[in-house]
Amino acid sequence: MKRIGILTSGGDCQGLNSAIRGVAKALYEHFGADLEIYGIKNGYHGLINGVYRKMEPIDFSGLLIRGGTILGTSRQPFKTMQDKDKDGVTKVEKMKKNYKKMKLDCLVVLGGNGTHKTANLLSEEGLNVIGLPKTIDNDLWGTDMTFGFYSALNVATDVIDRIHTTATSHSRVFIVEIMGHKVGWLTLYAGIAGGADVILLPEIPYDIDSVNRELAKRASIGKSFSIIAVAEGAISKEEAAMSKKEFKKHRAKMKQPSIAYRVADELRDKHPNEIRVCVPGHFQRGGSPCPYDRVLTTRIGTSAAQLIAKKKYGYMIALKDNEIVPVPLKDVAGKLKVVTPDCNEVVTARQMGICFGD
Ligand code: F6P
Image (tube, rainbow, N blue to C red; front, top):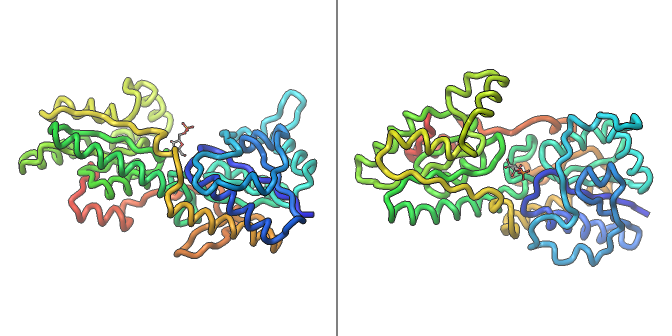
């Protein structure tokens, strides 16, 4: 009997359920009745506290188009994994105990950076683990693409498209804040796809005067509206020069609720047009996965099942040059894939005259 545990951890995204479906269906195809799948509730929290249930094949039906995660999720910071509770037991020890209690042959974890750091730790502790790369941020090292990214991109692009029409009617400058945590992939892609005039990313610190010059340039050629796509993690040049500690202190004092509002305030005195802000937030993570993510999750999920069948553990399933390949967890753990200022997409955007505020 093969016994497989599965959990989803970290922020949710589109495609989690279709990835779970991909893993499960391919496992049932391979092992038939000789298989038990255990759904672990709310990510590592469920593994730590022993909250899980045996799933049946019917549980995996209807998942291809369903948003969110049927298993629930939570954030369990990696840095707390070795913290001891009042009885002196760490979370890692509890997870190992529950893994053994469930008599698992393999634990499949669907998650982003933090999740894979913990997955690698569990693997180093002797558990059989396979990781599946999810996040709308596309910031996981070792894979060209994470699932969730393209679905969120569709939403973010749709937001910019819709803002475009109303910004044009009212001759307004609109600042659209896009998710992505500390990296700019989602903003870069949505900015290009939505025809933003200015794109502000964490990886390319901005100077507000440069942004303002771009707005003035557009106004001088009769363009009465402008769209600025700003990543939630964007920083100014002044902030980029600060130490981590100084930056934290500086941001704690920021009176605006988020970066888009700050950029709006910074521009308000400089630019004659009305400046407005749009923050789509978690809309970007909600709803059905787009067709690309349905295909990607199916490919990734089935490949995870193939690795389990071959008893090959300790890998994240990655997309590289359109091939699905296993990448060792130890190579992935703790590494971020950030936008490089000379990457193809940035170069293309610059060639289109898009301003990065630098
Ligand atoms: O990692 C995905 C993500 O949506 C980031 O883009 C964002 O910074 C973060 O999660 C938001 O997290 P939460 O849902 O916990 O507010």
